[in-house]
Amino acid sequence: MKRIIISFITVFLCVAAWGQAQLNTKSVKISDFTQKTTKVVLTGNDFFDSSLKEEVTAVWHISPYEFCTLEEFGALKTDDRFYFLLTTKGKFKNEKEAGLQFFTLVKGGAAAEKGINKMLEIVSLPFAAAEEPCGREHVFLRAFLNIIQNFTLDAMEKDTNAYGGLGLYNIDIFKTENMGIVFSKDDLSDEITQELKDKHFDKDILVIDENYADTFMTDGQEGILVSYVVAPTTPGPGAFCYKMLIDSGSHRLYYFKKHRLTKNQGPGFLPEDIKVITLQRKKAGE
Image 1 (cartoon, rainbow, N blue to C red):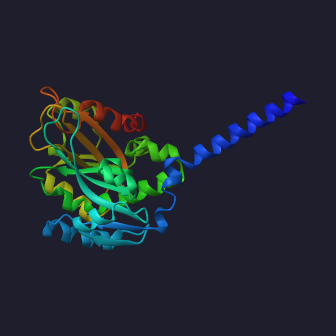
Image 2: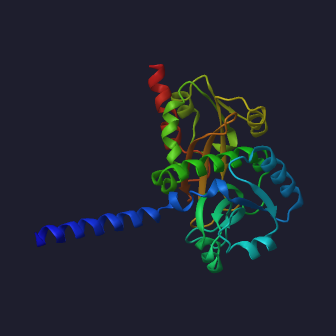
Image 3: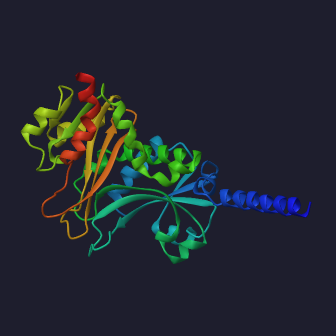
């Protein structure tokens, strides 16, 4: 009988501990997101802030929101009644200077006293070079905001999403065999040869000038994926390049990959990216 009681207590303690662990998971910590106000932190750049205000007003729908200045963010960042969407500059290991800008969505709290990187992060999306951004970020700004919202809702649903990051959407690339793909020619690395294009691209994959490619995003036709690449203006040791394919109508993210930039491997979609992206299309056409 004593052994049974001990066993029961042991099981009870394990269940209690498991329940406590569940309470500490990321999806639980951000479960209040839709009920709390998201403070959209303006950068101080009037041109960019004007676009940001316009697009947030047009598409932000998953929580109440307010705009605030960097100074107000500094005063409010420790308050867990708020979430914050702000632009940050990211520096990877071995990089001397930050090479990329990110949209970062974080939860306010006491940890903010130790820096933004200590705050609870929901998602961080690279969107432009830290120095001399190319300007395409304005065309894709609405899409970025929707990607962030979609991911936040998915992260609230379960922890595998919350901890998986934006790469969790890559599995969906295998469902795109009937969709068009538009690559800006500047988004393809130097390793993408004509021979590789002939082998892997079908009639519904276009490689065109950047301005023309961006019109597909502006037109907003669903079922067409448009390429977007983020890389430092002058890559140094340790720098990374990010590659995305985004549905121009739904703004759903279908491909999100990064690779390290080296002397032999420059920015843009690599042959291995193209092989993955077109794999299901080849099967569908065989």
